[in-house]
Length: 257
Ligand code: F6R
Image 1 (cartoon, rainbow, N blue to C red):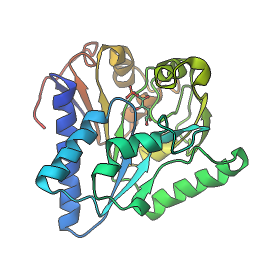
Image 2: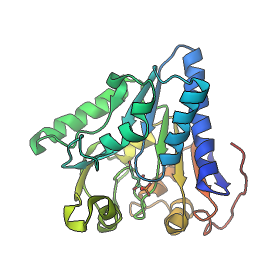
Image 3: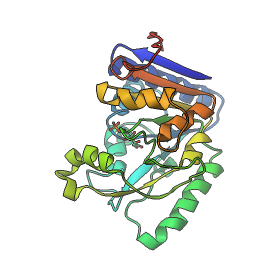
């Protein structure tokens, strides 16, 4: 069942997502079972990670039994570079919590090009061996991409090397100083990989996401709007702030976690 929750601001939305993740992590810990999280980078999840770190520090939530798979990484990209998604994850989350290094998986942007196909097959196998993704956290790009699955994209795509859309490169350019320094490729999990997650939470904040969010939720499912594939599966929860939800035909205002 699709669910849309609209919060007054991104801080409230981020807190609600973090609380949901924390409850899942805690429940699994009590059952003595691992939990597999699919994680996103970019500006959208920063508040979620901040709140998870706060919950770890103030409430003692442990991440020892948490396994993570990140959606994507720029290519080429050294993990030690401050623009890498590997660095982003360590800076915003991993270095502040008690997760085991061996449980962290992030596509490797430093591989030689000819090693990428085998790496991607291995990444898919690692997700399967971990039992599949329990909860996938997503943001949405202005092109409608989820992960770095740029339009047009088919539903059966899995982890692979992709070219970034010009709009995505423009949006990333601020982090790289200029467009000419911005990577034009990335390694990303596929639409099929994402759709196999047991639960999906997709977040969107701010007015510049409103138009694409309307299309993703209300237009027909279309390879030109990658996030529209989410309409075809149950258990997708959209968490938006008022600005991001502004163009939806029906806005279900609710703000409880
Ligand atoms: C990041 C990712 C992307 C971003 C999207 C939104 O791992 O997969 O799909 O979620 O580009 O980026 P922000 O949050 O920076 O607006």
